[in-house]
Image (cartoon, rainbow over all chains, first blue to last red; front, top):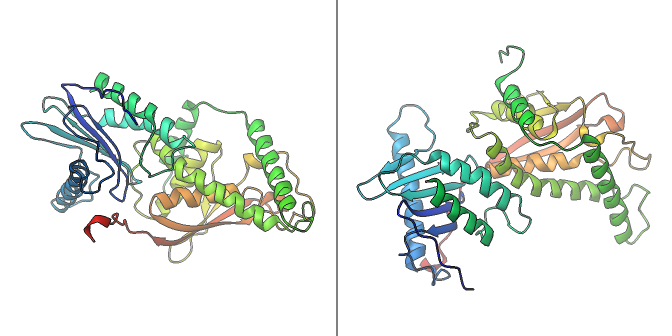
Length: 152
Length: 205
């Protein structure tokens, strides 16, 4: 299946969606550096990367919870010199992860909007998409790409 | 729980309900009615005995409605969080019950369900509906009057939605206005809290 040329942007680097078991449902790369060809191979670099990001999310969540005396919702973002890592987690366990340039402000609301205006109408309400399974919807891929480039 | 007229959940539910696009209540009631009617006829036609109309397939129709409701509930939970993004995790079953009865029911059906009859261990509760928008204009025929739970879809929806939130529940009707009772009552019982299981890596074996 030939995919159209992926969008590129200098602000947004990557966008991933995970379900509550850690499966990566959706992965969009804006830097053009990730090779998705061997996606079916469980040992491929891209799969390792997806698992790494998920492990990172679980790790940081639990550390931030342990340091707090009161129950905390999920952390919102962290920044390094090279990138900023944003996350929006739903009570259902669905996690939307975004990596952007470190100069960008908190993208929590952007991720919320992606969920409300794109994920729910195009995936949750889509009879061809099973909940918590890998997202194959081309329209969703396009719309998310456009939205993130325009709104981050 | 102290309420100044209305609890927070009820207010939130009303606000969201007011902002959302609506469908005519009659359209919903008539469509649902036609649908249940069709299920009974189709289900009767596929079983070997000519049972459509005789009330024997009521149990199967109840099961089908529950299963459909389950599929709807799995998706509806995303819709709920899209419309009520400030809603976080509930502290206990009491909270969950209030969110379902006062907020979610209002958001999606336009009516609130009263929460009552918590059992001694706080693992079960009842939702009382004074008016059921699905059951407008409905009279159950005698053969089905004591076997069919007309709005069983709602039980499935609650079961599906809560399962996506890691709560395994059993949800069933206890009373139904269509059967001559004074109100419609759904019982929700928490069976277990499901722990998140991380997906197995087949390639490591």
